[in-house]
Length: 369
Image 1: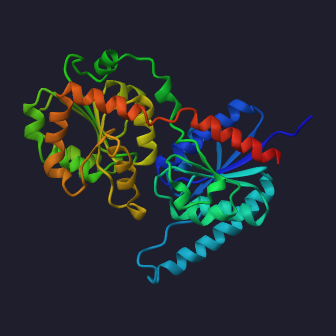
Image 2: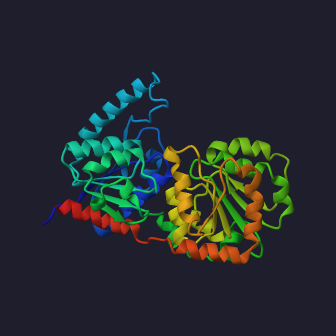
Image 3: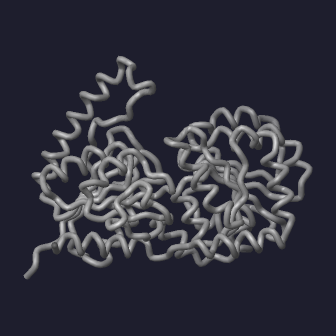
């Protein structure tokens, strides 16, 4: 009788790393129900809540990002925490004895997969973006397999290790059976009118929020409905700024728990250009206006967005221009049925389905080597 598969999955910091990690874990369990899976994350980051909520155990490391510029004195403490995290990661791996370690990007994965490499444990890394992150570029030399979501990743990684898998997405998005009209009604809106969904990622996006607040007159005067996720970080400030406003066609929430319903209701989405979000739009064929965050490493969100824009599969507004132009463009676009149809058809062509299962099969293969 063969022993049960044991896998460590590491990474996090944002929903863009956590959702793929949990999807991979779920796909491994679907193929190998007896598999033991342990997550390794960064203390105080989102994964420490989201992973247990998904039913998996997680261990936290005191790892954090370096301050810019690198010569800042505060980085001495960051470096000490990194060394401590690597030592802790080694201890966790020795105790858990995984067959494979999987990294999805984020601070914790650099320590956990670095420890796995030093212990001779096979590693697989999953790069969500069209521009590889520093942690994954550093880990690539010793990785056995590198799963990517975009063509042309040989710029960053050894070509012989790369597999084009796409990004795993939240399963509930694909399992949503509610109709468009039912979804719109469930939000308290009129299914005969067009609906725009505004999301700034799991943490919210100040620019997208400001784009709405600056043009409440446009919202009020339009025949379009707006479902607006502000992000918990900004919700109190926005509630204060909306005091006394009566706008029936605007619904505001700090966090959307069922994105499947929200996407189904939307005729058009306004979003940041995180890799996981883009993979979701491709799989569900959703027309989208992308507003890449400028506050990410190597400006990778702009590169993600342009990969779609060059195939006429999305619209793109620069962050600096969004507060002035985003809302008027969105209202114009959502009223143009032919444009919505072509965006939907083109983005669907870029979908890479079954990503989580393909990656899970690669993890299982590695465990048997």
